[in-house]
Length: 196
Image (cartoon, rainbow, N blue to C red; front, side):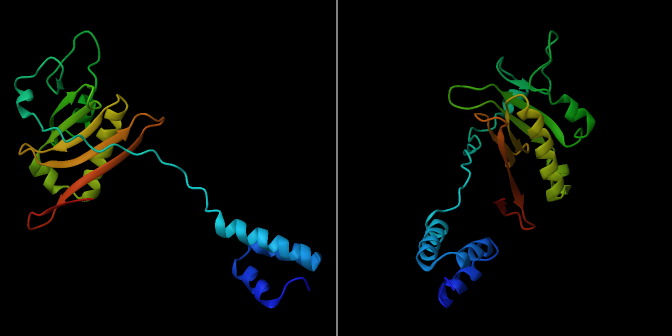
């Protein structure tokens, strides 16, 4: 027998992976068995499993919501009321608003990318309807509109008219496909907020 009792129990404790190693070790002489065992043990104990390096997703913009741009838009922003007669206005969220979010999504302000920040869309929702939605329904709303905005290279923030942040959909556009994250803020029954 090539291995002593303690080494055999160590190999058996490591599971199925070592069963084939045990079979090989039984066929070997004592010196070869020991060096093979040491090699296997050191390899599994000292070499950590390869972890995929996930590029970080940037934090959502902390720029304030500028509701006055809804009534007095500047030429660089796009709102739900902006119409470009020559071409499709980007980002195009009208389809989402007209199809399923007509009562929930009131308006939006789209900011082009600047030297400081990536492009973003601030969605303004009807607070009464938002508060009636379950967490999963809110997540679905943010995910659908975030995906639509992502296709145009925009991150998304969701607000109510009181300028309270409700959710974000933020992407790392430097990789393909873009890696994105959704964060939501939930108010409990006594009105305290926390992020998920």
